[in-house]
Image (tube, rainbow, N blue to C red; front, top):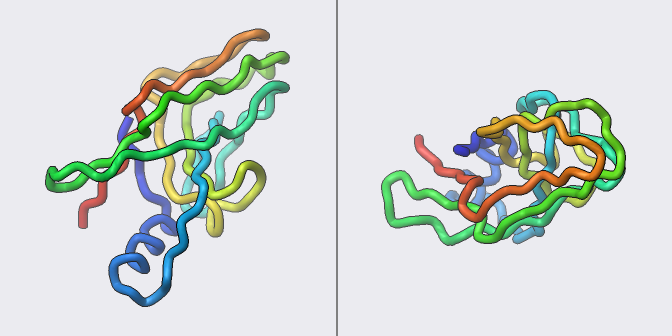
Length: 137
């Protein structure tokens, strides 16, 4: 699933290449959302018991034009020990294990290829290479 950079993600990318600001490394996390994130809102993050954001590592960008990066390890959310009835339709790239705001903590988001409404005991998984990001101007 191809991602879309948030305004914050685009700004940090420019800062990294123009040298205006030193950009620090951070531990990225994937959050699952039931409603769509935007540049100004996180969307509705899933809240079932057993849910937690998962840390994610990305591959080096490809030599393609535009370059592409993707998750280098699989992710598992859950198992969920309660059912909220919410459908997981989106994911977002966050800079913290919990909380935050779209304008200060979310770098990108994705529409999931297959939406899922988890039941009690279910898990949600993301395969290696399923989360991709590329940058074009």
